[in-house]
Length: 531
Image (cartoon, rainbow, N blue to C red; front, side):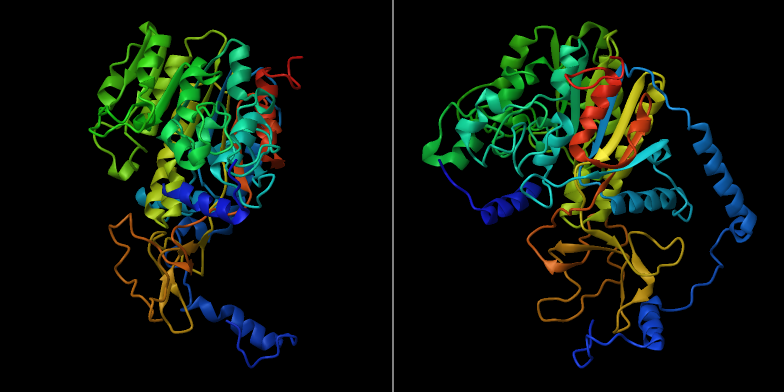
């Protein structure tokens, strides 16, 4: 067995994503009240006027009335919906930190021609909210694997692990293939209750977020047999079943009624060219898509928007959608042939709704995370807006009487919204009022770790003026030099609407979320609302 140090594991977490104090002062003596005031306000810059503020907001009664409207909404929502949740839709914004939500809200409003700060994302209108604590059993800051295991199985586990308990060490094939260490998930519980199940992702079908509910591996990178061989080397054995194979041949993956995303290469042999002109990735010669078709004779494989839209829902028993060889493209870069997250969501709801017993579906906006990892908020915020569109569509297509919708994130990113920009300042631009001690403006959005800093390698300040305009993939500055951006350990938001949504309040452990969903839907082996 290969053994990996925590330092090595930490480095692997980074791989997963690629995919002023005056020295002469006395630090022990607090500054005077005068110096405190001066220091605190030093970064404020020019005085902020109220010229840009909408006229109606200058009247104090505007704010009193707005507050009263919010009060009345909460009073009206004070009667909990205790119906049984026939359907559960679980939306996951990968890497969607609270600051990502805030910045996306502002960007949405600014795109609509408003100042932006007053805008709302669709799920922010949900009546109940909570915070989720995202740490892993052995890591202060989570990756998308241990967090996926927590929010799909109800058990916290080790970083980089999927669907197995925390007693399984990283890369331990024997332990991870032992059924005694398998964790059951919302997929299992819903299937046992006779519900239809499925998932959608803008990453790949074998990526960490969706696979936490169907795969049981000690290494999230074991996506194909070639990946397993790479990590295990001479210790490789066919007993280590890769994630793609588990999805097609093992429970609960093989019983999923609908799965859509990218990652076709993980299911095809190296000798085969996929529908996108790229060679498969498997070394074992297996064509898992043919195996899927054999197991689902009434199933349909779709690989582009046209085929998805032409799908005969009533005559199709199962659906597998694969829209790229690897990850799907960012929405801003997507080809005409790639469906949007909203389009996939609409198909999924209509397809799964055929089951009179209801359904459970997991829907991931997975590229929010990638935008943040590469310090490109122009990308991550656009992905967040696409995500919120899918949430709005799902809520409009379903009833709050029988469908619980839960929206959350797996982990945060160290994105900050800094300084004192005036109202309506371009959220993707420079802070036109805030400046540093040298009088140079800085960006409103900044990351803690990334590839670009405010100072170049010679210690000179980089010029940002004009760099932001019309370049959504512009890399924003960070403070610490890194090969790629990292995750953060902040709590993330939870937003709920529908039956038993009132349970999603307060500060929750992330692994509590699936138990609440199961309670609302009366599935699983735990407490049930209809018991």
